[in-house]
Image 1: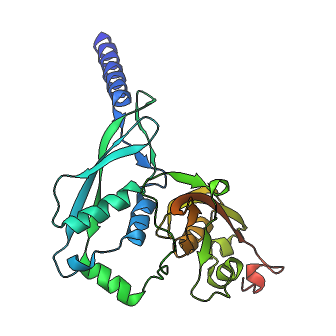
Image 2 (image 1 turned 45 degrees about the vertical axis):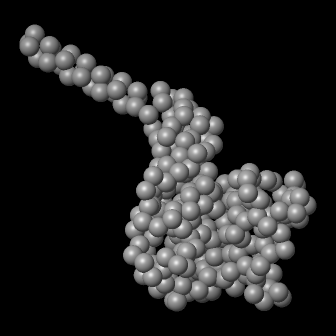
Image 3 (image 1 turned 120 degrees about the horizontal axis):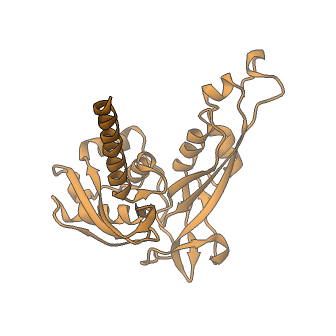
Length: 263
C-alpha cells in the first residue's frame, strides 16, 4: 500500500514538473491573421521579379525582431538564391502584423523568422490560368515607412478599383458572392465584418474576422476581399497603408433553401 502511495505521489510530482516546464516555455509570435491565412495573403501579394522567372526558385527565410507590443523591425535575409527575390520576401514579410511572443503569460521580445516560397513554375501557371487585376500607375509614390493609418487620418480614402468604372462595391459583392453550402443547409445568415490593411500595392493584408457568422460565410467573405484590388489611401501626397473594415451580409430570401431559394 505504501509503495502504491509513493508511486502515486511520484507521478503527481512528475506531472507538476512537466506542467511547470511547459508554462515556462516561450510561445513564439503569431500573425494576427493566423499562419494559414497569412500564407495565402503572402501568395496573393507576391510579385515575382521578372529577371528571376527564368531561374530556379527556392525558399527565402526572413529574420526579424518582434518587441513585446508585436512590432516587428530589423527584417533581414542571411542568404538567398536571388537578391531581387530576397528584396521581395522582405517586402512581403514586413506587411505582417504580429501578436507578440509570450513567456510566463506575459508579452516578451523575440527574434523569429518567416519563410517565403518562390516557385517560378507555379507562379507562371497561376498567372496564365487566372491573371490578377493590377492597379494602373498611380499619381503618388508609396510611402517608404511601414506606418498604418486609419481612414480618418488620410487626405484621400482608399476605394475599390474595377476595370469597368461602372461597377460598384455592392455590384461586385452581389455578382461574386457564393453562398456556402453549409450556410444553405443550416439556413445560416448574418453579417461578417472583416478588418484588414489595404497595402500600397492595392491588395488587402492582415485580414481579421471581427464578427463571425460561421457556416463557411467567414471564408467566403475573406475570399471576396482577397480578390479585390484597391486604389490605396493617400496622405501628404504619398500612398500609405490603411486600416479599414468591410461588412459582407449573407441573407436568405423569403423562402428557405428547401423551398427552392436560389440565394
